Image: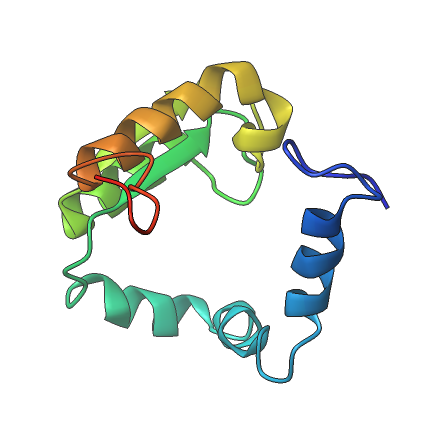
Length: 122
């Protein structure tokens, strides 16, 4: 298994990360999300109140018009949109150097301070 940036495959952090993923119930929210139908997810859009960033590749074959889908989602969620020209369904993995900074900027705007202060440090 490959490590993730900041985690070497043999590091204690990586081992801890993998162990946490195996905890009972850890993957339940993901599995529930993956089991939703298009109608289920559409029903949630109008009631969502969390900040959102819609990232969509222009060549996402899951949608007839990926750009229009992204704009529709962003409108319903009152979200920002990142349209990634030439990317498919996973623009964050296809063009991480382009998408990563945009996600970072979005996340930075959600928190008063990043990284958060360590315990006992101001």
